[in-house]
Length: 187
Image 1 (spheres, rainbow, N blue to C red):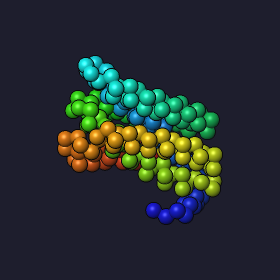
Image 2 (spheres, rainbow, N blue to C red):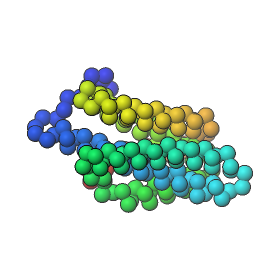
Image 3 (tube, rainbow, N blue to C red):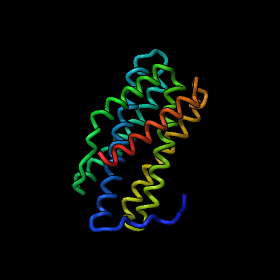
């Protein structure tokens, strides 16, 4: 990926349309992340001896909820509609979180690592694209990306890559995230 900023699309209104896509998908991603952590916590809060991971997940969920609240405000300010897929992303996120938590702590961390890896790449390309045109928004996205990187690094430190079937699990989750990004931009 080049460090050179991506020029705006040609045509009247194209810049706003592209920005709307970015904001829509970022909002959707934060919404899904909140529900992934809620699903994981629903399982692990009920499990004996899981207080440490439950606390970690609660902290990460709080970060994602703060990001989501900010995107709610940005969408309202800029008059951007959220994705029509939001109800599905809530359910899918919760199911992914609960499902990986049922597989064990390491699988829950593998889920975080896989999701945050895709999101970091996604934010990085948006930051490069927006840097010159929307420096304040790019700065906010940079902070959000840094939070996501901290979540990923924590998940790796907690043994994400030691999860049973990690390569397949991570690949499926990453593919699902990329598909959700593409869908949420447009729908």
